[in-house]
Picture: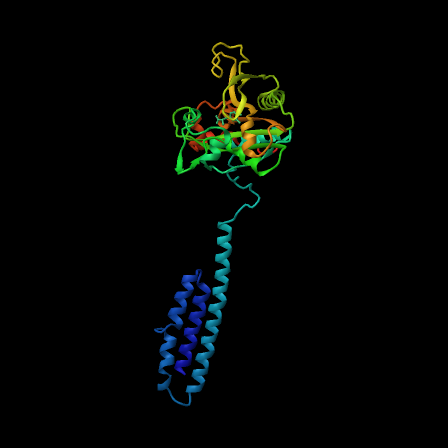
Length: 350
Ligand code: DAH
């Protein structure tokens, strides 16, 4: 009988301790001390063999009942404490889901990209289609095919990177004129934007820069068409107040050839100390001319049937004029403080 009383006393104590436990660790301590290997309960169970065999079943049964009860209470209490802990944790980590989120960095298009897109969009309205050519080009297409034979002095003006025998990094986008003409019958009206390479690097030259080549070939395309097209482009880019002028110049792939200036968009030629035009009133923006008949021959067009104009412009120069960017090198440093200023600038078709 003593044992039964002892078991009941232990069970009462255990249930009391379970009730008093306020944390999961306390509860575990209670379990260990009342049901663990060294607990009074376990001791009693171990000693069951020594008690009177007639009492053994009743004591054993009681012990099992009490143990089951304690187990049940432990589980119940554990669930309660876990629920309390969870709700405390949820409360502590409460999120206000109605707060506006932090905006991700949107990034911005590079001024070279926006300038190319702008020119594409403007001339697209005149029916020019964008095409591209490879940056690794044959020496033949980069030079011979656009009328710059070996030993021609014009080659010196374009210090070229050679990749291997007969293979260059294109020094101009002009070879795309020939690629376009060789791949389709006339009429042709294309723009070719892209990177070009010259072995040249200082404050005003980068070994990699960008050009946009234009080519319009059809029956009776004239200098007047060239001038009208470039005047439209200049006014759309820089404002309706600007004028263009053509100065005679030489490029092997055109005859006649011209350098094209735009009137200074900052001072309009009125400020003798203007930082943009240096008081000249004019800014050179591109080279152009009437396509040399030799190119038509190489392309397989009959020069008697067609005529055309071509132009090539430096994208960085246009971008610098459009945005007042003072130094070419800013374009290539990838400095966020510079690039972030172009967020929201023209992004697509105009
Ligand atoms: N390819 C010339 C250059 O890189 C630019 C150029 C001038 C292109 C006159 C043309 C053109 O198509 O007609 O300097």
